[in-house]
Length: 339
Image 1 (cartoon, one colour):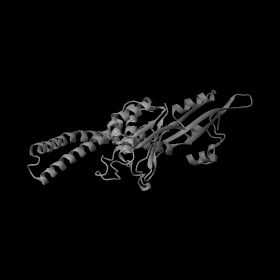
Image 2 (image 1 turned 90 degrees about the vertical axis):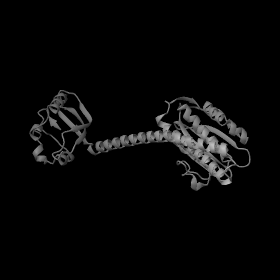
Image 3 (image 1 turned 180 degrees about the vertical axis):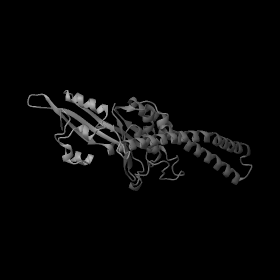
């Protein structure tokens, strides 16, 4: 606290500690004697405050310490008035926020590094997967030619090897296509818009029409809400979850129920089935890439469907989880933003 001539009237103990001076050296002495190299900027600020204005700044970078360490302050300077109502001087409040600013800068740097790394990884996955398609097609094509031209001529062992080549190439192509979908969740995504979840669900059922007929499945959903998101990706969530319900079924016909309810500021969806269920020890694993709980001979697929759902839902700032009972069925829950 200073008078109109910028002589100190009061300082806090914290201020004395911060500047490393004794109170006797400060009180009654001029601010400009204590800080002879005060910049023109600060002199003008003090002049305006002494004319009745209030000044302030958040995260103001001040001249560095003698050892070169950067310093940031939040500060505010207000005029104080005497009994007559005239400005008698000023009061300055300082808050050293150097550690907070440095921590924020480091966090921003880490976020930028992570975004750059994710972008490079997505680009690599796309290019690598795309470039791998051509040689795989050649392998699959050669296996098909061998089978058509020399089938039943080279012996049972040769026919079996040719079949293994074709099956392996086909599985690899399926895995690459799924990896491409994973890499494109962000890089090839569409802008968010209002999406009718009923339409998104119907689009998924259309893509699964043959599988639904083959399994005699019953899929029920009514009055699903409008959500904000990527239309294609939301339909993909439904398609993958319904597909899993049809794949991991018991002998009886699959029954799938899809419902939604409002929870806080989002919609919570539930996709419930009457399938084989998932043991509790695997609940935290199944959303990882290629985390399979069964062999390909038991259930076909690449094991990427749930990982893709998780990545899409996280892009929509949502969550996905499940409850399940072995032999009775599984319910997948996920959240999406309201329209």
